[in-house]
Length: 153
Image (cartoon, rainbow, N blue to C red; front, side, top):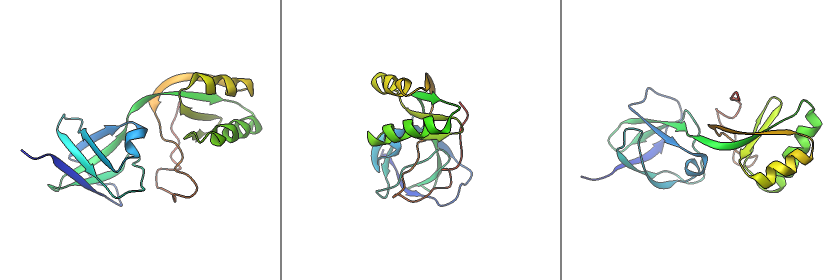
């Protein structure tokens, strides 16, 4: 039996036949051997340069539509009521090339105790959480229809 190949990213959401749940690191990869949520082995063979987002739809070689789901990950969420504090923390995290998710009154990044201490030192409160991680796509990678979808905490 040959492994199912997933080769196409669809432009619009469609009803899905299966789900593929991946952490952010794997959603950045265009070539990956993994499993659908059902346990079926698949190989991603996607065009390079695109980060998969929660809700994206893919087409497999057998015609099935696969929905991408962001996996729950260990992240740090930094909170502040002061927009200037949030901007300073975002600047310092960005200076370290950290993928960063931005919400109303909070910033989220992959959990790292050293970064947590830095952000606390700037005056923000930090909480470790287990939630899906959807960082910004980056200014030079173009927009995406899920970019403005802010997740609760």
